[in-house]
Length: 243
Ligand SMILES: [Zn+2]
Ligand SMILES: [Zn+2]
Image (tube, rainbow, N blue to C red; front, side, top):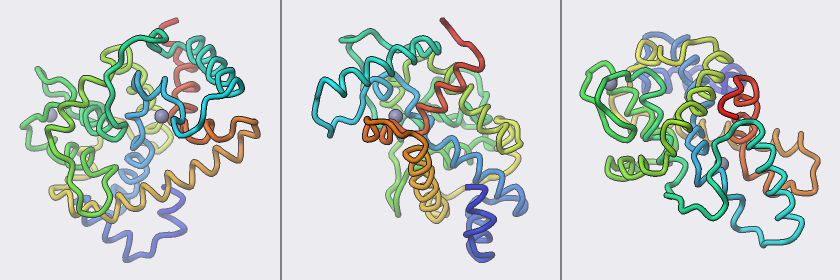
């Protein structure tokens, strides 16, 4: 996204995104855009997403082996994966993202759980951004949907993983994860439509990168398990959570 901002976006597009964000200046908009694009798939870091490989692909011994290898590596890296066969709450990754992101990006209001919305005026933009992040067009995410996704987040052990991911992205961009409210104050989800489109584009581009790096016979599921997993593994490896 940071690269796209510099090289692909026209000045008019940058201005549009910055205005939609309610950013104080274009520099803040650029940092927020890079940060939000980077964390837009953090909802993949939850139990049901992490154990579900590409379901469109048919089961095969190769695929079974590949999944088993991934699982073993992930457990070694400290991912708190559920036991095979455990009952899991499912939610779409983008709903989990919307549920967890505000609390990872600056809402520290007490007494709330993920999926609940605080009332602090300064934090409303975090909710607007998190809800709009994975939307297409004028489709607005409903608060009930986000509240339900709370049950699929995996709770505290996964909060640690997601926080590590968000921190890693923030470091990469050069901001503190909790500083988002000081950069942008979006008030209208629809004003973020242009930005959401850019995020889908940059996610598509980064997936191509991943596919290019990994010359494995299991490229299909490797591709679809997404960047979030790769980041999760390395982030977790670095901080050595759990064990
Ligand atoms: Zn995933
Ligand atoms: Zn708050």
